[in-house]
Length: 494
Image (cartoon, rainbow, N blue to C red; front, side):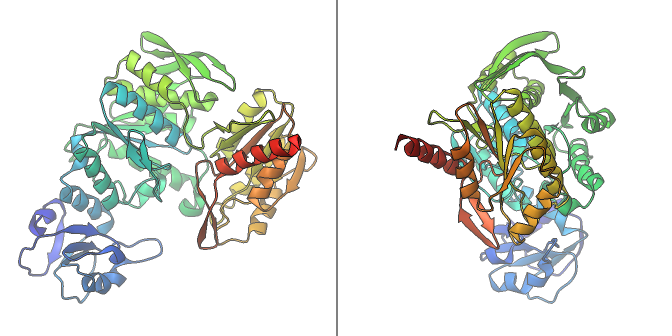
């Protein structure tokens, strides 16, 4: 694509003279530049792309988009803000893939991943091949590939959307993180539907205040009706039972639909029944209803199913397709994943890594009536320190036995993280043991549990690495739990 064509989508403040050239690719990372690429110098939290313009040009960049002039031999195009420009440039380069498919963005503190899997399943029934992008990975059909970020950067996101389009996808469902909004990763992306699941404390290490975190979510919601869209204005799906989300929904000036259980909502569930095998409820959509047999467990799964059903409904999916799609999902990686094997305790792996998520999953476990509820959890390093004692308090209050351990300590001292968790724990509320090695903690919890006990391993869910310092080591809670169950069975037989 010619450089002059690309520049049609951004407001150019100043441009050095150049002979129009063909652009072979776009990148914001000087390390990934290939000959013929356009380099966009973005100011990030830790690094400023303007400092790497020379590196990019030496690697083959034939033009540079920047916010300030830097001496370089390549043509330089100045714009007011590269962070927002990159999304429009990437969209233009990949021929606006988001406009060729139905696009649904799901945001919120908890439930994003499960909601995307459920909605993907419904849309496969009603619309056709559907792509997915989120915490677990990206892909279509059964082929899901891992990636580093919940929401990819703007260039990578448009590249993935273009790949979905070229494969014949009719729709894409993606998670929209608060980081992704603030860092411009969804700039220029026009969603047909936005879903706001819930909001509680998270990512305050980055956003600093809850209000700033909420502002990021509001930013995604407001993008649904921003001026200049090529698509019609997007529709909002919001959780009526979350008071903060409800207020955002009520203030939204576009088309919207609410879902909920406790409050009157446009789409709701009644006659909810839950156990360790399934979750059943009656889905009510306006004047219609249908019985749902959900393989995912817990009341939080009902909310996720409602959000998916509501989004599918505004995309004209029928009740039978909604039912078929919801009933079809067997599991979501690392989300209340019951680990099979053995005749001992029930062992569950869950991604719960926020206070609200941990309280919800522990509450559901407790309501199942195990003889003892045994919890293994820790908190990640280089993340919101304030939630550590809160999560410690929640875990001790609801659990009968608690193993405090590590969870991606990153560059922090693991013992300091554990100590901050312990600050919130009343030692009289439950049996508490510190086992810093996560593998040992999982094995010890499973070995110590009885047949009618339930062991919850919380925090990492689907993740397949443990991050210690700057290195990532292979580690899976699911694999470790399965190994511990097997070890327990062999040990007892011997």
